[in-house]
Image (cartoon, rainbow, N blue to C red; front, side, top):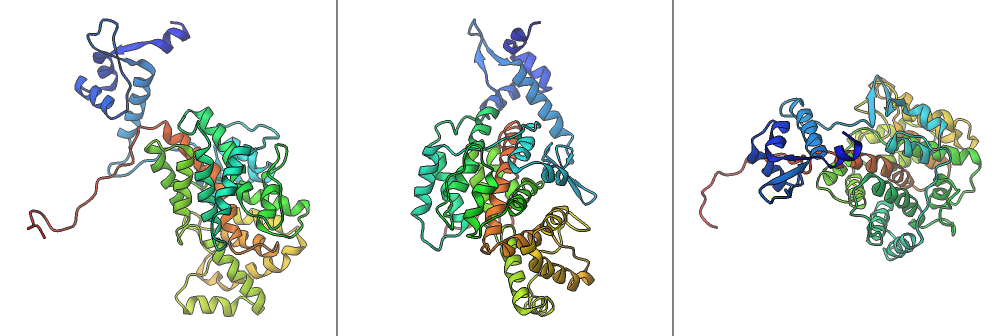
Length: 411
């Protein structure tokens, strides 16, 4: 059978049911739920089904049947975390981020290929719309407020946003990420990201008015690449739920940004920045840590539920920042905090390392959130691409009702 014949092969209802291991009536239930497409046969006596689509559904059904009972199984080929290391598509993520720029790491996560010199460019119409929308916000708006508005504005001007094919989604992603950066207000009148420019260089003036050297740009680029993805964090799970409902890529990024706004997910970098600034101001970590603990607050930037030892992202970023003379005071403050807390067995995480970068480069406390959100947008797109290949609306748990049993009288 030729490739064209395989591509056009149609199955009868009975054949589809046999392949799926279900009754013919269940095949039509799949159609009504949007899991299968169908069309009438040439004689008009019944329905036929695309063989490749039926085979894909059968594979998904077998995988789901093998999942542990009562547990939502989210299959992913993107990120593996084990033994205090993490890997992107099987490659050590720290080594990848240390050797290649953010754009190339994003491409690796998306496609499994590493195109040399990959750059992202913001379309003029999307960038104009996003900038206008962001400019209309109150001055006190935070970075995540601006990014959410920029995503919505960029979506409206993209007529292809509802095309969920891999090619279309990646095209949108390569345009959206530099649009987000270009829409942010800058300390100076920074130009839009150029086609041959690195995203880190375009992002820098949106974070600080300090003039960067190459080592500082490389540190920011490393932070972006390290933060591209990290398994199923809360924002990533929100993205997959939205993608399961077949939301377009801009909408799934909006879902991720919404979850990132929560104080238990996205605020850690801001808190770590303020703590380091206070340690530098007071000349030591002991009184600052004592006040956090006395107030019942967790000391930010320490510990991670997925690592027993030091967060490998923090270790890599600390090592790079050691080459920046301006980072020495903040690095010393971070090590002081870690030494004071060592008795608790907590190690520095990436939020503390990111705080060293933001404090030492004259960035605001919110800069870490911006870096995290921009970086993680690539990972959210990668997870959306995976979820688009799964059964639609599979992330629909059943509620366990704990209220008063009916019937009750009408109030």
